[in-house]
Structure formats: C-alpha cells, structure tokens
Length: 329
Image (tube, rainbow, N blue to C red; front, top):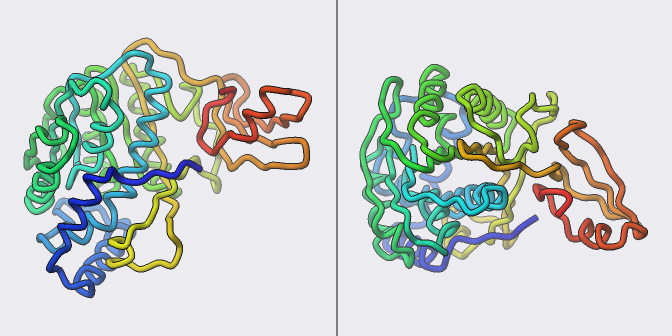
C-alpha cells in the first residue's frame, strides 16, 4: 500500500504544538477522544473541548486523516482530467487536515482558496495557528469559520466540497441533510471520507446513493454508478500507510514505525469524466509467475483475475499494483 506522511511543514507545526504539554496529559486526552469517536453515539456538540484536547487530537490524528484524504484525492484526480477547483469547502474540517491535503493535491496550480467550517472554536483556533506556517499559500490563506453542522444549515458554495471523518458524529437526519446540502453547494465535486469500518462504509454508501440521486457521477473508487456489489459482512475500504513520528509515539506509543489508516470514501463529480474500468479492492496476491487481483469492475461487479507472465507488460504492472489502484493501469 502507498506510504504517505504529512508534509514537513505540518509535522514541524505539530511538534511545536505539543511543546509544554505533558506527554501523560496528551496521552489521556487521546485515549478519551478515541473512545468517543469509536463509541458510535451521534453528538450535536464538539468532541474537541479545549486546547489540550485539540492539541492531542491534531498530533495523533492529523497525519492519518491527511493520508486518507490525500489518497482519495489522488484517485479522484486520476479520473478528473484537467479539472481543478478555484474554491474548496472543508466541512467539519476541525484543524484542517483535508485543507492541507487539498493544498498538496493541487499544489501545481495554487489558485484555489479553502474555507474550513467546524463547530469547535478550539479546533478552528488551532487549525488557524498551524496554517500560518504552511508552505502552501492556499493553506496559509484559508478562512476558518465556526458553523453548526446541524440540520437546516446552508453551506457556502464552492467548486470542491470535502467532508472527512465527520458524518459519523451526526444524527441520521443531520447526516442526510448535510450530504444533501453539500451536493447542492458543490459546483464541481464532493469527496466524503469515513473510517474504514463497516459502519463507516455504510455511511459512505448512503452518501453515495444521495450524490447519484442528485445527478453526480461517481469517479472513485467505484468504476460505476450501479449498486455496490460488496455485501455484508464484507465492506469496501482501502488503506494508507502512515509513517509514525516520534511525536506520534509521544502521545500514543506503538512499537511499529508506521500505522495503516483504513478508510472508506466516495468521490463524485458534476462535470463529464470517466471512472476507471475496474479497481483493485484487496491486497494483490503474488504467486510464482502470477498475480491474483480482486477487482470491482464496471460491467461484471466483483471479479477475480489472474495475470501471468505471458501477459508481459500487464504482468509487470500487476506485480506493482496495490490495493486501491485502478486496473488496468
């Protein structure tokens, strides 16, 4: 799987953030936040309560959230052609991980402006502080606004709307209303990222159905707009490998030098574009002289294909293929 790490400027800002915060206090805050996020109880109040909460959360979660959103954006850009956003709305963005990911994904044009919406003053304040030292002009210039994400709130219009790791915090009614409003507000594309769990996948599939009903075309990860062929107890998800820094070990420990961030996502567009013919939905299995690929295909649903040495260039490509990649390359 691809290995990603937060940009150097973000990692430096996060390291500076924890200066003076006792490691035990940061670790306790992380433990409590993880328990809240995994508890499955929707909330209409900020989970991030104060600066120590936000500092611990940012140090522990921002690199992983960044990696998941950046991976989804890469899959989207591969199918979106020359399209690029002039404006970006980061809904429920907290400390701005998705804004950093969008800033990197479209660093080659540097023309877009980002607006981060969240209901936590502490998260917005800290996100604004982190952004001041960003290399990306788009991140430095981002606007940070306090907004309730409850039902009935109108979102500002933007070319690209991202919603990452937030709809699981909402009630079912608010979740449906937020996705509908994102579909209305986006001039070009909506990208939704959730944890790679059965519940996270279910939320993504429900959002996918809403976006299709609103006239969007699914560009990634699905190669089609038909019903998802993945059936329970299975679920569709992907992973990005995140290098663990000394900062990460300070707040949460862990002996491995990396962690695998599993996520589910949907990327949908209003503009004409074509999804991949198929996508690798499991780790490729390498055998002697052959590679087994589990694919979600445009016309046949889930299908296993075996690529052997006699396939020449395709065999070499299959050996390099990764979970989540489009196929054929």
